[in-house]
Image 1 (cartoon, one colour):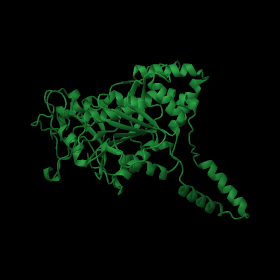
Image 2 (tube, one colour):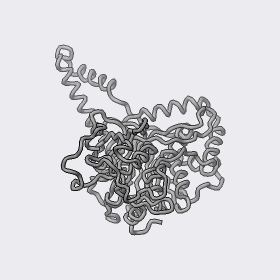
Image 3 (cartoon, one colour):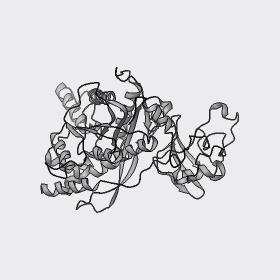
Image 4 (cartoon, one colour):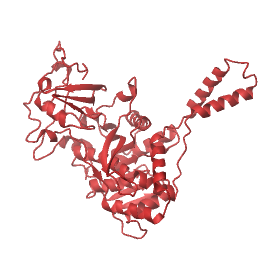
Length: 468
């Protein structure tokens, strides 16, 4: 259990402690920086471990839903006798993946004014004010995304279960794995899941910390979803013994500001809120109820990534502090910094997303045994940024080529870098570590301070970005 000393002790003591011995965070791989061409291996950062298990490895093998959960989901779907389930699942999947953010009233008004000014350039066409207003409304209907709130009935909840249960479980499991790998001493006792839906977060948390967790608080506005989640816990029945003990269901968040949870999760729920004001209020409330980690997960799209970056900035820049917990927040993962996201400030904005393989629940329409869940996440923690490791994050699939490796990195200085790593230029250890790394891992590279850099850096023969 995490003591009152908080994350500072946990993160300091567990700084990449793995295997039989402790591997201290070293400068052994300070190679992808100007002026440094070889690796200093004096600190022996690997110890006796192979390169394939270097301290930055964080990717998770193919995830499988617990057999009890898969069996309960299949039983409930067969019991419902729903028709055309496969078509409904595909339609809902496509709709959720293509969903964008609702247009704010201020933005809608700005577009209306712009269209009105454009139409007034031809005053002869719109001499009557009513015709002008009608033309503006028609143009807005054609060019504005019409966001609609989903109301989860009993049948739609079952369709959502069939479409998203295994993928959502995989995404949340990857987020939990990040914390477990980097802070193995962290043993939470309480967890709250906002927008709990089918309860996949509860199952993933039980798989990760089942020995320490004693309370799971599931909050969802849909009564049908809560009933379905409870049935899944009881093997598909209403009177069975729950597979995970200590699970409580509520339709509303706990009112008391003093009630905090070790881990707070909101998976695929921010996108269900109708306005930015609602999202702001929710994120502030969730952060106040967080004692250690706040985990936010959304679809790996531009819309999902933008939602998470807004929430991240809100917590980092927020002036509101809970009287019961004045500790500030910092980004635990995936960003190695608290600066603006370089993916969004680029000339062509991209979504910062990750991929997690998982075994599909064997529904009748699932022809593939394995799939990939593409998602975006942000993990915020209580404490200070100095407590976290600041190694660059690999943001795209690693390209392995003969005698060199291409890695796209999000660096601690807030920039994206395309590093071309070779054994000749960067040393055998860094080259082999880069070659066995995957999308989402950390590359153990630490940038030296300015005083350690030479006055005249040598020219880079590989053409690697000079800020790498």
